[in-house]
Image (cartoon, rainbow, N blue to C red):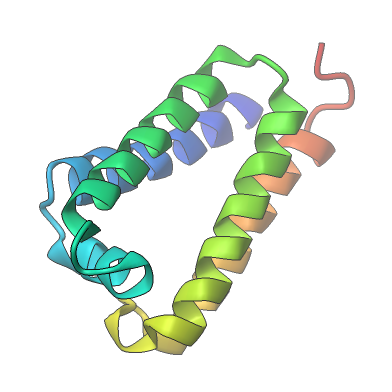
Length: 121
């Protein structure tokens, strides 16, 4: 189960980073970034965020400092969703229910790293 969830978590970051942001297949992501961080650099910052998400995929799959990686993911997802909830709620795929999806994802990350394995070494 741990291995399956690890690949699932990595795939979420991969799809959001590569498909939605770097390749720009989902323009809503760039619109959200532009609204929050500014229209002038929205495109570039969306690509940078997507690249960062791809680095998270590599980190997840490497298994290096996996608990710190999980905590980082949780903090990023929580922060991102709070900011989006207040600054771009109309652009969110699931509207106010986006927060529920984020909480479920955070729960999966937590469960995978802190409940399914006792010794991350």
